[in-house]
Amino acid sequence: MTYIIIVLIAYLLGSFCASIPLSKHVYGGDVREKGSGNAGATNMARVYGMKAGIATFVLDAVKTAAAMLIGTAIAGEAGKALAGAACIVGHCWPVYFSFRGGKGVSVGAAIGLMTGLPVFAAIIAVFFAVSLSTHKVSLGSISAAASLPIAAWLTNADTPMLLMCAFSALLVIFMHRSNIRRLISGTEGDFHAKK
Image 1 (cartoon, helix red, strand yellow):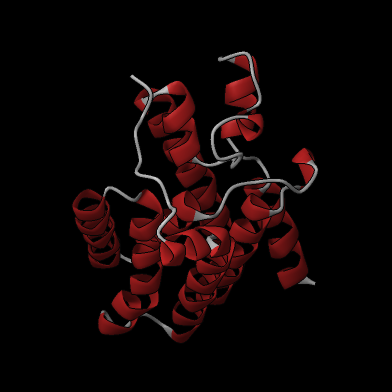
Image 2 (cartoon, rainbow, N blue to C red):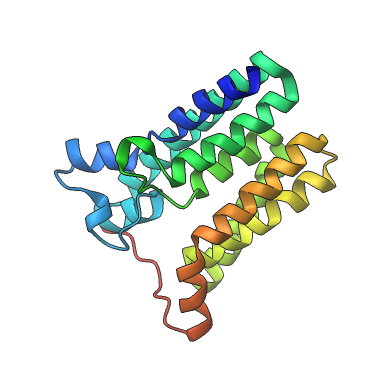
């Protein structure tokens, strides 16, 4: 019962995709109807500018940290890991927004931070190195996601957290499947934030 409560709380927190209320109530539109159609920080930056993208990233990271702290308070490391997994599922398929959410990148970054500062530093470094060298945020996101469980393993993360990092990485990569197809075909566009 304890774990069910953690999953429900974390999923409901994760379902609050910051980009959707921000785009509707601050910028006067639904971000899912613009740009790539994704409810994530990258598309917010692409459509409404970097401030909007950063605000989305921060709010999505805060909800993830809150969910994982609640999980920790209830059931320790196992609760923390379970909350992280439920939060990223909620972010990708949010109950409040017709199950149309983001791709989990901001949540994945927050999961890295909650796993440990060295893990967070590693995935952020991978993200920027790949994104800046290729001008493709999607490839940076995929690479950062792939590096998450590796960084967690190298820093001796507990087994529940390691498993959760692996799950989160696979989910983020899965959510980028259309990007992967475009990367392979050479049709993935370069990222340009709105001025």
